[in-house]
Amino acid sequence: MLTWPKGLLQLLLLYTVWKMGSGQLHYSVLEESQHGAFVGRIAQDLELEVSELVPRMFRMLPKGEKDYFEVNLQNGILFVNSRIDREELCAKNANCIVHLEVTVEKPLRFFHVEVEIKDINDNAPVFSTREQILSIAEFVTLVTRFPLEGASDTDIGTNALLTYRLSPNKHFVLDSGNDEDESKSVVLLLKVPLDREENPVHHLVLTATDGGEPKLTGTVQLVINVLDVNDNPPVFNQSIYRVKLLENTASGSLVINLNATDLDEGLNREISYFFSNSLTLDVTKLFSINSDTGEIRVIGKVDYEESNFHELPILAKDKGSFPLSGHCKVIIEVLDMNDNIPELSVN
Image (cartoon, rainbow, N blue to C red; front, side):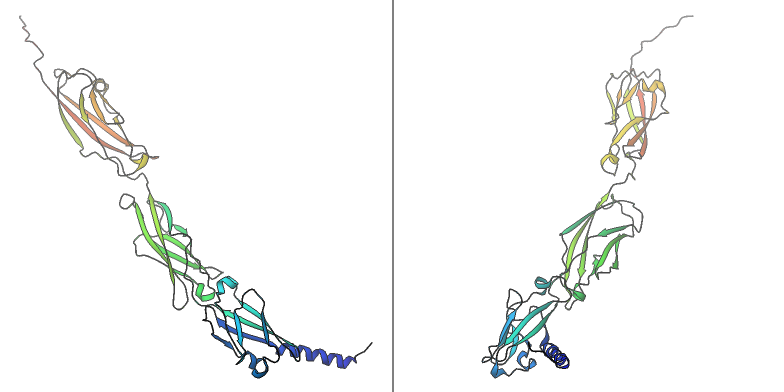
């Protein structure tokens, strides 16, 4: 068995490491470069003569499924052979490297070549949906924060650093803060109270802009539905209603149909009608009110000789969690009829 002197063996190992180091090449090229785009003078950089590439069986083997690069054996130049999409090849990895193995024979030598794929700003920010819908109660506390879903950008670095802006409006502003992953969270801030009765729906546009050159943008529609708060009481169109009613009007006859309105919605605008508690018991025996429709009808005998005037205080109350009410008066003037014969009194 052949035994190598210790010093000679160390020298041989050092020589091998140096040769391997000298066989390491590193190039870079922009993604989406056209076919034939120049990458590097690989023959020159490997200290190979162009004339010996063919005789020495120069071969380049990619470590992957696609031949992204080729070498022109006539001039020893490495060029782009097929389209390279950095996002498809390396996703969000900061370093995107294509590894190549080069061999020549006579004598046999191996070289390792790395081509770094540089990102270009070829992807615009994208929102996951075309619109985002928010529901916010009117008169909610000012400076309340409403997180929004941000956009994503498949580029990396500055090309994927997003900033946001909101279409002009008087109620909302944006509060964007930097996150550790270089994306920006986006939060909607309320600066002016909402009033559903003034505007029940707000339509805004949120725009995301990346940091590349040229800058690319993406947009999403913001639909803000203003939820009702019971902040409007029922209102009558008159504070006093005057009605003339013949005495002896038949029971069940309609006196007046009251109709209050409420600007709220849902239960907050549904109204019930009542006689006020101040109404005397005698009057409640003469008139009734339908709590749902506001109809006041005769239920007793109306007699001019007993009373020619009735005042009915009315309460309209909505059905909100914290009900609000409105008030009016119905004044009924009873008209006399010739329903009494003359009486003769003799002393």
